[in-house]
Image (cartoon, rainbow, N blue to C red; front, side, top):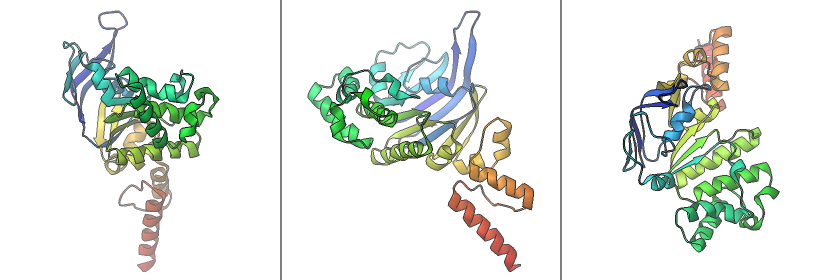
Length: 289
C-alpha cells in the first residue's frame, strides 16, 4: 500500500499563544513494498511526520493519502479505524504498552478490537509469535514474567497480528544491547521481504539506515532537507555532520583516512566488507604504479 503526503503542514495548539509550527512543505511518497529510513536530530519533525502516516493526527494544511483513504484538514475521518489496521506503528519501548494477563490475550487484543473473532485472533497470535522468533509455549505466560527483549517481541507480535500492509518503526531498538539491536533489525528485514511490507524506519542509527533502507529521508527544522538512496545520502557526509547528524562508522573512518593519508575513495563504504575492498584496491593500485 502506498502513502503520499502533499504540501503537508502541521501546527500544534493552533490559535493559542502556544501555537508552534512542527512540520511544513512535506511532499513525500512511500511506495508499496519499499523500505524507507527517516533520519534527523531531535526536534526535526520526525515524530510529527510519523503520526501522519496512520492518521493519528490530521494535517493543518495539505493532504495525506493512505491507500484509497484521503485525510485533509477539512475532511472528517469516518474510516480512520480501517486505516490504522493497515498501517501498524511500533513505538519506542512498545513493551510498556503490554497490559493483559497472558501473552496470547495481549496479542489478540488488537485483532479483536478490529472485529476479528476470538478463535481467529488466537490463530493470528500463534502465527505472529513465530514471526518474532518466540515459541508458541510463551502464549500462556504473563508478559510481565518475560525478559525485556521477549516483552518487546511480544509487543511487536501484537502489531503484526493485525496484518498491516505498512509497518512504521519508531526507534525500534531503543535501549537494546548491540546483539539485541541486530536481532530485531534483522527480524524486521526478514518480515519486510517475506510479507512484502512497506517499511518506514525512524532512527538515529546511521548504520541501520544505511544497511536496511532503499531510500533515506533527512529531516531538518521541520521539513525535508534531502532524500535519496543510502549511497546518495552518505556520499556527502560533511553536509550531514553540519546538520548535527552522525554518519556510519565506516564512512567516518573513510573521512579520517582521507584527511590523514590523502587516500581517495570513489564512493562511501556502507559496510566493513566494502571498506576493506576499497582500501585493498587503493593499496594495490599504489603498489602497481
